[in-house]
Length: 310
Image 1 (cartoon, rainbow, N blue to C red):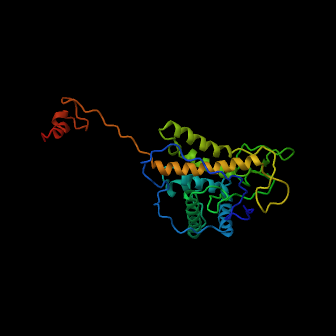
Image 2: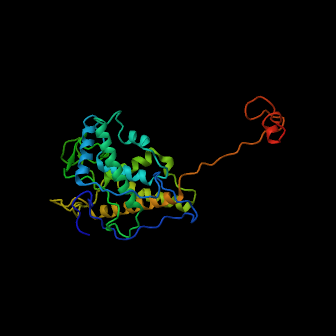
């Protein structure tokens, strides 16, 4: 694979070439339902350019002036991936306040429309990538998360609020200085934010084996929310200069997490939305009060209707 140069082509070196594990186990007759609420008709894919990503980050930077905890795009990218993989189609009106909790995050209606247009284009591209069969993450159509190109060795509070609050301090630095986020860390934090916000939508299926598989898949992503503590051996980005910044262990873990996302998307698309179990109330005795609350005896009310007397 040629070294990536920009967000839209791929922002990291992915070592994984093994195909992902098929989802386990699901009925062959299960309905094919698209989890994000769209139809199986794929819209025209118009990938975002570097300038488009820069616009998104600039808008988020503007929001960060009013709310320090505004996430970076990498966090948003993980958040989006989880929404696409979620079993239930979560509507924008429901997820925007969770991702961007400002009362009115936009400067004006034009900025809001531009952000949503770029978000939608990226959504379609990510969904299309996750629904396209691939045998390697090096494939041209594979899902390629757009990650922040972090070069600063230290991140101070307020600069990048999506960094975990318990990130380890840099030895010899200011007591409040934090380690720069590890490769893929913000992406994983964004993904897990959706899992935490809508936990019922991530409960495992009733099949015991599928439950264990689903927990394992989430575990791969959750592991990336922690810092990379192994010895750096390579550069994360093709255009990086200077010493290595990411460990080979981290790169493998990142690839495993991406395959886990593919598998979660496959499983929920196959299983379809959760089905609510309906519980039938016990039928009252003929001389008991009717369950409809009329105050009449059951035989003189709904029971009479059921028997054809009324």
